[in-house]
Length: 133
Image (cartoon, rainbow, N blue to C red; front, side, top):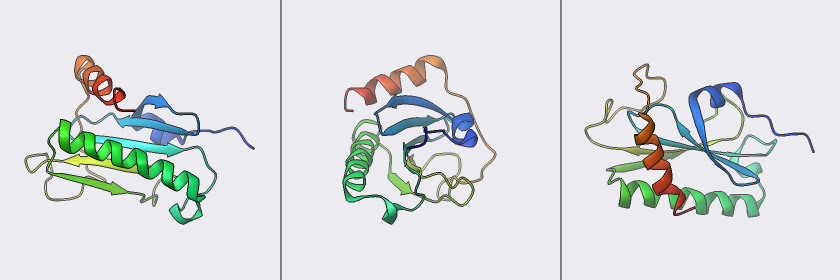
């Protein structure tokens, strides 16, 4: 098995929340929307190529993040996607959207608008989430 190497674009655009062994949970550095990235440490790039055990594990994590976004952060909509057109490394986006966010109802992909998290804001968000993981 080759060592896991995170794609530079994912590393540069997000921060590690927690390494879960065979999966990294990350937070996008753009505070304009709450945007999580789940990066399984696998060589495949398509969802259907994952073994069933990994799919179930990832689905449970997606559900936990989605509930957190809806119930704790009161988002209007949760977007879940495995696009991979630009970064082919397997990763899943779990994004909380609000009707008053910077680009609602448009997609967030490819937008240049960005705002860094304030340290306390990021720490508070991560601390709240980690109580569920």
